[in-house]
Image 1: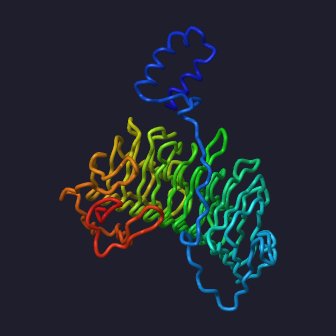
Image 2 (image 1 turned 90 degrees about the vertical axis):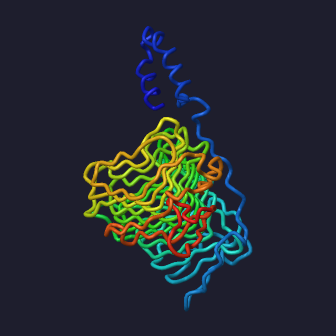
Length: 428
């Protein structure tokens, strides 16, 4: 569809050529089911955020660290604004934000060690046209932070990079959080030669990032030391990617990356600078009106780390685009690619320009899944040939599949080895 849009733009103003070519291009769009970018079918619709999560749907608070002072934030508390708590909290303290909606209450956090958590349910932060330092709802800077049960909604800033969180170095643990309708869900700083910063995301949701007229990523990670994403749910991005990372090490395990109906993502997973990437037990789905046919892209902007290996074990890749594309694209120059016990469905192929090891991967049809219309990709009646087989090569070190993603944003431990290939190794 991008090619047809390009051809039509080049024909604009050439009356005779347009007159001759228009009927043919129209017929091709009908045959290929490729509407114009201006057509309503191509527009990106952002729904209201889901209802605020109650006490039963958030992470129970961890025990207080020894000696920590607790700052409670809420309408009936001594500290009523989050921004005030950010100014008053000291290293090692705990900031508890009472469940509720907070509007335009943006903050910069400069502590060296801090826990911030919603209590009694989720604390929902609506940007309402504001941004800390014109960057984000929260700016996290050069400390060790543990953040849980917070929703970040609706950030817009003038440069188009408005994020729920701007992470500018340190170590950030993010648990049971929601990023909805921001220009970028979470954006990190970081430039070569790369920092030692780490970002770990657990059981969180990233959705509906949008910037009018350009790309928008649900998660964009710069040149940091390590990114870890576990049991999380990424869906519906506009033109950009569900996850984009330039980190040196990327551990992406037991998640669902599904652009779904109405999504307009380009790549589902993008690692443009290479690095050490391990994809284990993920569901990856590309919808039919994608902005780019590549689902997983690796190294397309050049390799910038000493180790550049892509290892994929026990994933399910589902391509709903009717005319193919690439399940996995790897640019020339990578050290190696391992693909083991993965499941693929739909049109398309891998496009890998690197030393490749493939072991016990399988292709299946949509009819082999239990309920593909609702993104349930458990095998309906798995045949013996789809049984898991352990890969015993040295490249598989540390890549054993130990859990299964359970929607939404949970995992189920395996008791022993997987039974079947793909992201549903338990067959359910």
